Amino acid sequence: MEKTKKKFYITTPIYYVNDKPHIGHAYTTIAADVLTRFFKKQGKDVFFLTGTDEHGINIARAAEKAGKNPQEFCDKNSELFKRAWKNLNIKYDYFIRTTDEHHEKTVKDFLKKLKQKDAVYEKEYTGLYCSGCEKFLTEKELIDGKCPDHKKEPEKISEKNWFFNLEKYLKQVESLIKKNKLILRPEYAKKETLGLFKQKLEDFSISRQKVKWGIELPFDKNQTVYVWVDALLNYISGDGSEKFKKYWEDGYVIHLLAKDILKFHAIYWPAMLNAVGHKTPDKEFIHGFFTINGQKMSKTLGNVIDPNNIVEKFGSDAARYLLLSQFPFGQDGDIKEEKFVEKYNADLANGLGNLVARVLTLVARNSIQYTRSSKIDSKILANIKKLKKDYKKLMQEFKLYETLDEVWKFISFCDLYIEKEKPWQLIKNHESRVKNYELEKILNNLLYCINEISDLVAPFLPETSKKIKEQLKSGKSIPLFPRI
Image (tube, helix red, strand yellow):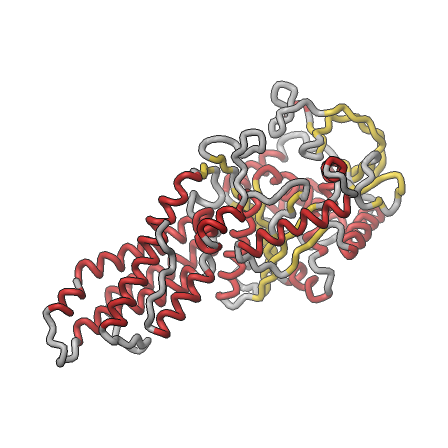
């Protein structure tokens, strides 16, 4: 189905504005940008949505602490995310905010439909609520009586809320996942989700009684829409246009998310969509958690990394590369911040940058003109053909780390080719009045390889790709990645 679709719709989760953007937010958003650029190069019509989650008790409390009203606080912090994505050269189609007027209308219309379909009901409820997660937890989810993520005891809350009748739609959702009509990747995510159906999955609250900063429930003015329900509905709000709706209805819908929100996206979200007769997502790709130098990222430890700082030190393309080349997308991993300079110099300055510089320097000194019609060595052509085939397959499987690894193996292949052919010796031993056909052949082989590399790295390193193309055209070598 994915291959036959011409429209693609790619989303990230929307991020809480109670704090500044960090590299966890950047990681998912860069990945979505890379995939968007890749699918566009494949001729697909792609809509890329990201944004900010701006309602709920945490936002209200953070705003109060900052001495601002909630809307002012959201306006300011939402801009921090936009600025970070601009610095990382992330080209989204729309940045949604849950305080957008059209989003509020979408939420209210959707909840009205849920009530019309008899998918929600009201009841008195007592539960354990973690304000950090902004969700109710069950006893079995706690570790030593505390929230496993926020390490604090949840509050015991009694409220009259509206609940979604999850049980009514569980079989439909389970069937979607088993038949791969809702594809969950990596495979562990599918297994983990199917395992949840064997447990007792309880109906969940769609409203809160005592949270004022939120969207008013359209059929009960004493309630606001639960922040998680509000946030999930951003995917069908989009930019609010009629054109956008076609991306959801006719396109291949892909959600990128971290595994801590898997249950909400893989079970609750499709169940809600089923209840009102909406199409469900086609694919959800779940990436893992990462630690910083072996420790969980936290403000208390002071190891939260601001993506703007990485851009300031290394540049936008290098920042993108350094984050995506740490470990496979979809797995847990550890980011070693102190290794950034070492990896930058090894892979970018001494790797890709050095290859382009040394070849173009030889080209300029010997007045070689690169032409696509030049006859290229058959072994090089075979190598590139295989690389492009593997590249496409890996990208379609969202294996971004492995894709980069294959491209950098080819960069190493080019370096070995130079060492084997030793073009400098041909220059040294050559009489200047005779055309150096052998040198021209070697350098044209390398120029061909560099042009292919520039195309392959374009989704990951868009500015670098442009610079390589410009240098190939001008024949002038300009450093891509100065050593640090």
